[in-house]
Image (tube, rainbow, N blue to C red):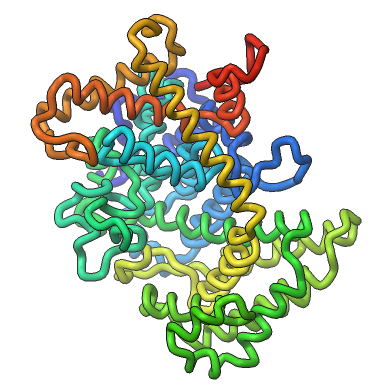
Length: 518
């Protein structure tokens, strides 16, 4: 009975005649891969955009493919271990096709310019449009596969199985209202559930569904009721989440070694200084550490302390030190010791590093029947968990914090802000109502239907930054226009966003641009 419930689609329908696969979960994988929202990820930034630069770097599409590859490998390894069969079944199941489908879909909601675009759209959604949910990439992915993608048999979402929809819920709660008690209020909030320290009352930092898709969350999670906690990932969601961490930790380092951004000397100094002065750095007070933060080793010491504060369930000083040694040997004194020059030898060294580390991390996955709220049921072994933290630190410290990247991203933030403002002016111009892009017009109608329904049944979920009770027709329309503009912008590629703003700003004389939108 449980397995039948996992295969239930949102509409309750069976497979469409257009589906090629016989497995319902394989059908889901195919539907995601055939979606235009999936295709557009090839034009969406992972960390830096390759557009116009010729840089061979990952985009959201290639990232998703690598996450799917790792997720399937993890699920297959877990399924091949007889001692885990009973535990996995008890927790709700672990199908490789489900994990792969969720991994392919997990970034569908990422807007132009990746995480930078996500932050800007969230700020605009909350502060400009009064949307209580704001914007969140994971929630947008769930909205796409359940609501705004029109390639499914019913024309509303992709009509995926409950298991795949549940596996996409990396953070299975809404920003503020579901479930009750809300995970942000637990003694130990799950990862991503806590409110931002500088914005109390705004709800969880991370969440995987808007209130408009709450019914779908409840239905998708129904087969797992009584098997896992209401705020806990399914096993397949945990597999996808772990695979995402693995891919992120490795391929971004590949990219920035390839383009010459990761320099041996600076990374070596940071890790080497911490290794030789670990005890001395551990003895610094917090103000002393912050005062010296630009000196080598201090940022890594800050990471060590932060891991103790947030992940004491797994953080171990000996394992952390061993991870620093491992990364120093393999990344610093191995890969980065020889600059990438495009030769066969450098390409092979990069491929070997990536394959070796991916295999090491995938092979280190294990299952916890009763995990801490800070982890899923699927976790990396302790040594490898620490290694991933150090690898991600290198990327954060020596790529994401670069001033030249910040300069580039500030321009992208201005672009998205200006585009949202221009589209808002267009969608509120009653003289232009008949000339709106059809997709934008359809999104306004969809959101108006959704918010009107919530205003009647759950008005408290619509009380946001600029909306107060009661919720009338004008308030519903304003919310709907805001959500439609956000949905519309989030469905663009980097190039489409730039071209559309050029056209709306009158800075191009070209009548037809490449700003075709979903």
